[in-house]
Amino acid sequence: MMSKKNKETRQPEEQADLAAVEALSDLDPKVEAPAETPAEEAVSGESELELTRKALAEEHDKYLRLAAEYDNFRKRSIKEKDARYTDAKADTVGKFLPVYDDLERALSNETSDEAYKKGVELIMTELRKIMSGLGVEEFGTVGDPFDPNAHNAVMHIENEELGENVIAQVFQRGFRMGEKVIRHAVVQVAN
Image 1 (tube, one colour):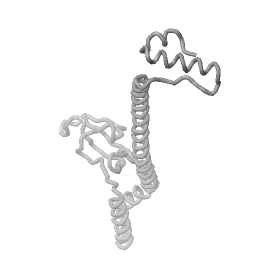
Image 2 (tube, rainbow, N blue to C red):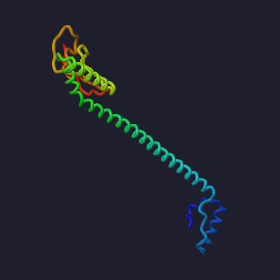
Image 3 (cartoon, rainbow, N blue to C red):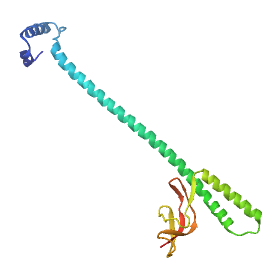
């Protein structure tokens, strides 16, 4: 049944039609009152359209956010994979550095056996070539400015011939691969 307020707001013709339908609906349960007039359908249709547009906009926003999250995940995964590869390569090179140091000491010692010296030189040349091919570079030479991020100062001397914070002596060479320091150079710093 319609409320009294709805009946009062309708046109007189509509009120008569509704009264007739209500009278019939009391007699026959199969007959129902009309749901809404065309004007009411237009008003509710517009609100349904707006609701649908809002829902679509929300779903589109969710989709864009999900796509951005996936893109960030993909980029982060690639970056992490590259970092793992670089770290593994740096760790492997780090394991060979004691061999490099031993060969360097062997070259610095005097020997009367020229064939031995030539063999050690060839091995050292080949090792440097391989390390260079992997992107590993040596650093830490006398006269370089001291950098606490790349050098480990174990001694300090006063020497007026050298500038301030300059490497005076190198005890162990440093190695880096790109921006990653594999081993810090062990040095003596002047002034």
